[in-house]
Length: 349
Image (cartoon, one colour):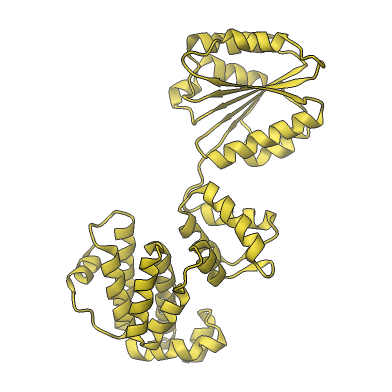
């Protein structure tokens, strides 16, 4: 039996029930959901009992065969669930699993759950026996590039929609923690006034409903309100807002300014360039004010500065992230930062 991806599992379960299911991986949420799908289908076809065992070094593997051969008081068909925390049952466990699968009972479904297997364990006899007899669903991690698409699919299942900018922000907020993503989506279902999720809603709800608005910080900086922007940044810091969220909002606006600057250099009017860059009509005056103050070269420096801060947040540079965010806010507001050392480091990195 070939490996079945987690997103194929529901469709595969409709075809037939296998004597053994093996779910392996380190993504807790996805592992749990795959196991839930298997249990739900098994219950639907009469396997209403469940026996669960946590396998450690002291586990008595004779319990597996004993459980398989015993019937409950009401003769229910049952799911026998083995959770092998280290992913290695050892010689005794491997022998017991293979022995069980030589003649699996029609009254039992065996569900084995482990962390991600190393390459050596994947070649073990008990794994190969499972592949021949039943279904193996390896759970692969969701990487950074895949995360926005995965979030979009989850939001769609929840009856919600979000554009690419909102998905990008949500991805930066949950930092690849899928359990946190699940919890935040459940919260957004309650808070969204309609099915669409705006970046503003995500920033202000997923960021612990901060009193200081991230988008307010951006607007004050664009307006040239240095004092107000600095106060807002300090307020966000004191409330525990993560730097990556603030940088996302600032960098998004700087990229918009860069797109406008490039378009106007090619002969487009500001109004048309701003519209093509996705600037709403009611924000054009605000963005134009910043554009006239900064011009192309200064915007290019801001973009490089933001890139340097991103590296610092990811641990690729040794720098004080909050100091550099302050310099970025000052420069975007049109005020030259007093301490230029961090700016130079960010530009050279």
